[in-house]
Amino acid sequence: MSRPANRALSPPELQAFGEELDAIRRRVTAELGASDARYIRRVVAAVRWTGVAGRALLFLGAFVPMLLWPAWIAGTLLLGLSKILENMELGHNVMHGQYDWMGDAQLQGRTYEWDIVATGDNWRRTHNFRHHTYTNVRGMDDDIGYGLLRIFPEQRWKAFYLLQPPIAVFFALMFQWGVAIQDLRIGRWLHGKMTTRQLLRVAQPVGRKMFRQLFKDYVFFPLLAGPFFLPVLLGNLVANGMRNVWTFVVIFCGHFTADAEVFPKECVRDESRGHWYLRQLRGSSNLSGGPVIDVLTGNLSHQIEHHFYPDLPANRYAAIAVQVREICARYGQHYNTGSLPRQFGQVAWRIVRHAFPSRAPAPRPLVQQTTELAT
Image (cartoon, rainbow, N blue to C red; front, side, top):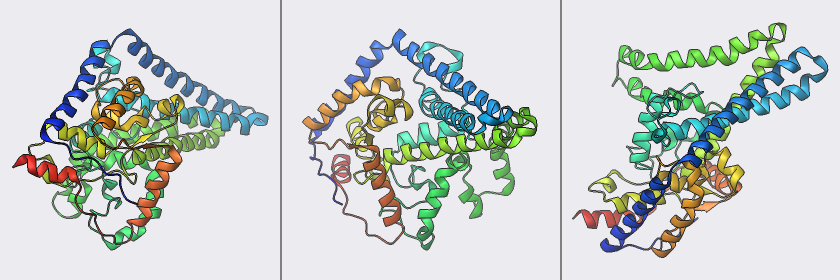
């Protein structure tokens, strides 16, 4: 499948492209206020009350046998919804500092701790810094395949990748655990570049977080149900699985569709603001679907806008997207968007196709243009 051509921009056009996108940031920042604060506080309330309702229904089904299955199904779905909202629309966005301007201690990006086994500190390093600074740059962005999958033909093929279709399914089911260990650099330990003592030291905060999450979901709440321990435990297990799979789907659709590109390290040398925007644009993919998809994805349905403006409140992305798309059209740049089935179908095809040896395409104009400007 061939990628759409992007018009090569002259240096003045590249500068103007970056300035127009910077101007959007300034306008939105100046408008932030009460409506944005109300929005995120409603999200906080939705996370809290869907979680309470979900756990209550799990207990109701446990203690009223005739309601076991309908209450268990409803409770599990509500608890899963709560975990998805907390992970996507609350935790991820708050940790980007999108609401630091409010001065609310519970919504501060540097200190927020979310409801998964990964620590907020590790996520801020691997995601907020490395991924958003070096999006889809080989050897610098650890999110390219997460060290497990060959997503792009530019990645060197190994026989191990033949197993990646079933590995991808397992990774989706266990996604929070993959995120949790991403910053531990276990590959360095396996190759003798890190001692066991060093690994254990950096793993201590993650281990404590894992213990707390496992105890909460699989010991504390199930024990409250007494002899009906098992249905509550299974409800928590399925709810966590729902959140894991959904997060995997959204993140992979945002970065690994057919039109998404990967870049060599050289492209970030002397990278201008306009080039940084181009790289974010060409390495990201949006999802169409409307307000429901927007909320359930934490507005990562607007992945392009998120990569342009990760610290602007995500509820603003839908409006920003109209302006961004118009700017991209004027400058001859492909704006990658599509339905969830279409985008995930492309991701699944990438996972299967690049499990086998494949040839990397010729370098894209972005790399050539970066080299020209650097010289």
